[in-house]
Length: 516
Image (cartoon, rainbow, N blue to C red; front, side, top):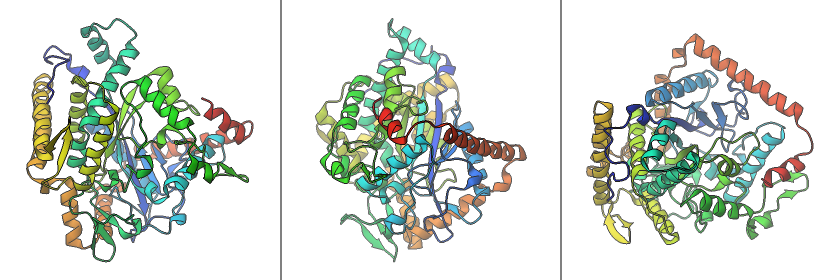
């Protein structure tokens, strides 16, 4: 197990350089009072899903997404997220926010509403892309929700570390290389996050079982997997078979860009058979392996804020990595916001640990072994006999979990000594308890509640009501209410302006977009 080798001891660092920057993207389905997927449009009082910076939708019109700004304290990010939730509740008198990653009771697939973003070229692009996801993977899979964690180091840290490393070239190039080193370390150890924070061991029967014989029935409306940690990240969910053979190389920005771009420009016979534009209706953006970069369901992405209409890979190539996006975290069904401080502090530590290790390149063969580890932990992570493939050796998950957490604990001691307090040591201790006692994992706790209730649907619905009461809309201050109401109206005005000033045809716009 690697130790803190590249940075040395932390004692001579400026503590401010370890005030990590983070933002949260929390997804959640709108459901009716019976736990069925909402069929209502995105509430106008929430503003425009196209242009609102903080409240939007993802695949489905019913799948809300809350996006915080960047904060250097976990508590500040959660405070902003709480305000967004409270404001949203004011616009949902008859609906709840679903507290689980796996969806509520679903209607027939064609009745799952696809998100709408208006008549502008960029709005139509977003909807056509989602139509492509429907035709390729089905609408059901696109109702799964998660928590995305956006994370970066402050510029002052990079400047100091580049100097310590003897780097004399362009700083952004150094940053790119360091973030991809982090990514390689993350991919080798992300199975641990699936075990510790996975919280989706059961599904509503309406989701469908797709031939997964390990699922067991519970009551009239529930199927569950006895040892699953996160069905969301299993091959039932985002890690789907349709992309099982797709190879994207995360060894550097260049290899990432090249392999991802190849997939975007490589025709795929099954998608060609679907057709791109049939009559006047678009079925997908293109008939290639990937329509755009975001279609690749990775557990981590290097990111750069893109300009309107700019492809993400172009933004990365031209301006470099700005932050990384962790995408493998389930919604915590026991917390009103789907994420809490304890999880954020541990993930901060985990990401920094990945950054400061000496992470060698990941050969192609290892990439697929790492994927197998994650799939096994997602589907069978609480099985006491489960073993992982660690550098070609078969190792029990519990043993490897202890190894990783021991190394994390060493870093936590140094960070607490530098920053004061024992926050990071406590974070490791809480996660170590889950390694020693599987019943403490969120997946085990949630499954126990589901078994007691006899229904995934009813358990989640009861939690949704509890969360709504804890985040009572009346707790929103008048100033916050006014600010969020004004933001919603500004976003509607901005969408109208975009639609009014569009030029040319959508066909020409799409052609230009794909040429980037």
